Length: 61
Figure 1 (cartoon, helix red, strand yellow):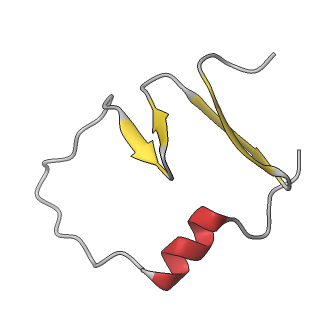
Figure 2: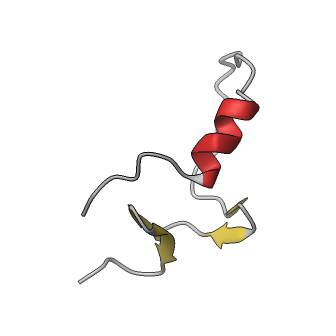
């Protein structure tokens, strides 16, 4: 598997870098999030190569 040199998500970050955060110990884990219109749930696998990114509901075989 190759690592993509650029992607839409990476380009978006470069255009709008995150502001420096303050550490307050309020982080959450095991929550559902939406990235670029795709729902990612706890336990999902995110797999990427030069052709794109996919979200799997179980480990790739």
